[in-house]
Image 1 (tube, rainbow, N blue to C red):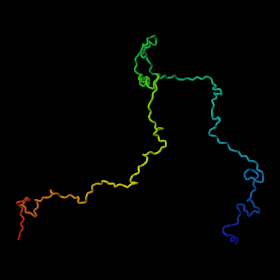
Image 2: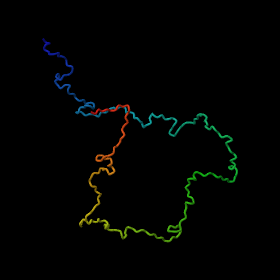
Image 3: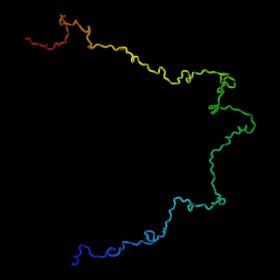
Image 4: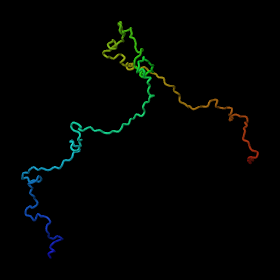
Length: 254
């Protein structure tokens, strides 16, 4: 009978966690803030400064100090190298000269003028290439100064006069007012103020209307061939040739 009081599969059991109904006070809902540390410190107490430990800094990609990265030669001091004389054994050099001049390559007879005193000798050489493009002027490039006229050099010349053309500025024909002349006005036609005379024109020749077809002339007619109103002589014509073996056409006339 006792099992029928409960409905469903629920049965009384111990709670798995704290329940607010089991406490008369607020219970674990409210927590007192701590007085130590830096995070969530109680606002009613003074908070001392907090210090943290930082990890090791990252190594820079390029270190400006030499440090242990460079291996300094122990024989080099601040005044230079400090070491005794050292000798090394080197192999024999190989000369690249393969062809050397022989006794027949020298001409001692040509060295006479360099060893003994000799008279000067001259030779005729060909024209050099630089002479062709020589820009030095020749005798024909110079001209003697003239001794006549106003452009004499080193001579006294008489005064010369020249005839100058008439200037358009300041002459008698110069129009200072820039007024129009008689040719600047247009001539008025006489027909505007007086009676107009009759005018005649020559037109082209006018053709009268008519039939423009070609008509036969006197030479186009043959009156000797007319047999309607006049008798004419008998005329003979040539017909076609008939065969002797062909049956003639017989027409019965009753």
